Image 1 (tube, rainbow, N blue to C red):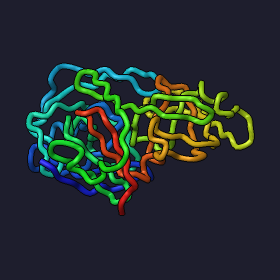
Image 2: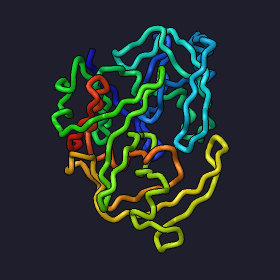
Image 3: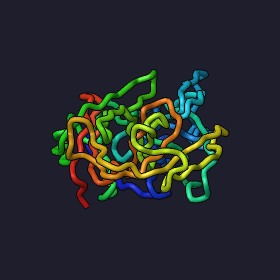
Image 4: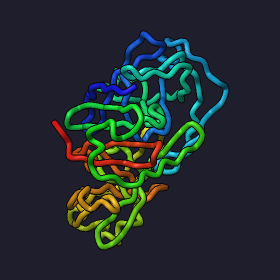
Length: 275
């Protein structure tokens, strides 16, 4: 069944949507294509009458840390008219800032399965179709291969990028990130050096306690989806960090487009955003 919900922006690049757990209780989940599976907080699991399955899912963050997430079942999980009964979820509590205290979970692409969906950041909508991308007007834009890598109940989505000076990268599509992120090994090839004017270095610790060194710099030239040269960003601000992927494609690149994800056909489509 097709449908749509309104997106609400928070924290600059993050968006959240209204969901119902157990058919009646409405709450807010961040919609994030970089989250492998749907997640709920411990408090929401208890209120919804969910139950732990006794199994865990093990996955790695982009910086390589292994996270083990308990799996659980909730009576139902609904987005608009799209509902899954006895839904499988991960249980994970994050230390969220005050502006995100309303958030009690994350909605992942796995929620849609093979149902195509369109993220329209400009219009502020999340739309899904019935059978294929032809159900969605935004799917009239150019398409590219989408590599959906399933790992048990979780999925990670990748596309190929063409970087300046002929370099290529296979990057995760991650709406939970703001900038384009590339592995630190690309710095020299793209003319970015620690200590150069305009290169900002930041050292810190992430929310899981992992220490990092990040560099933020403008990369001169075009970054484009491979095979779709019109879907591109010129002179992007890129974050470089030692990560386990070539990179992550974030909100700044995706925002100008209505982006349709079709996991069943392994395709991603881009159309100019409609207000």
